[in-house]
Amino acid sequence: MPLQPLLREVSRSFYLSIRLLPDELRGSVGLAYLLARATDTIADTAAALPDERRRLLTAVGDAIAAGWSTAEVDLQAFIASQGNDAERSLMERLDELLAALLQQDAADQADIRTVLGHIVRGQLLDIDRPTLPDAKALDEYTYLVAGSVGEFWTDICARHVPQFATLPMQDMRALGRSFGCGLQLVNILRDAGEDRRMGRCYLPGDEVAHWGVEAVWMQWQAKAAKAMFDGIIYAQAVNPPRIRAAVALPALIGRSTLNRLRRAGPRALHKRVKVPRAEVHWLLLRMALGRASIKTLRREWENRAR
Image (spheres, one colour):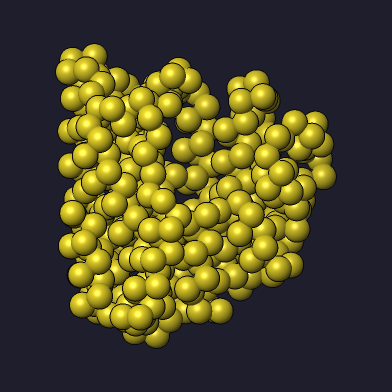
């Protein structure tokens, strides 16, 4: 099953990163991403009641873990409720994705099932908790839905790519975990205002009650910035330039997003802040011209601070 057209439909930034990967990684990584987007679609569909989302998400998670089809899950009404064409197409092709999972080698299947198990657990918690009580809960959530992805990425790259990195795998897994958590935190900070208007808050509830949402929002930007730094350190340790570029791109976009949030200040809680598509494409072009060298990455990292 060709994954590239579906990836392009459901993702803007990740599709750009996955195009940079060598063939031996593109299939497994793309498949894991699409499965995660499918479960995320279930978790986030407001038209479905929480109990229904929880039932469907648990059933799909079980299908991924066991290699079943979704024939017994009865997704038809849910699929029909999708207003987004790309997400409807994704859900219609879920059984194709599950069949593709069975075609991966045993180690890749195991890694995909492990990371999807973490992600689904985080999504189920998300359905049950419209607000997070404290920093521990936020750290748990960002690990389950994104930090675990950094570990998955490291493991699968190390298995398929000889001399993947210059740092020990234990260090790469730790950096990847921090980077993944940080990318999710950037999303939380970027969407904090919109989430609150919808009755959700991913910032620690006890901190918000004590200091107020604006102060807490600004404080957590420092942790996100540290995680983006871990991401660029991770990227610089990667040997193959194409994979280095694929890792560096979200780190650089994340840093740009944080700088835009910092410059906007609390006003960003009332308007959408994002990195323009044109800036992302220019960044990709400059990295290509510089062959994703470490010097190029460092220069682009410094440019993101302006």
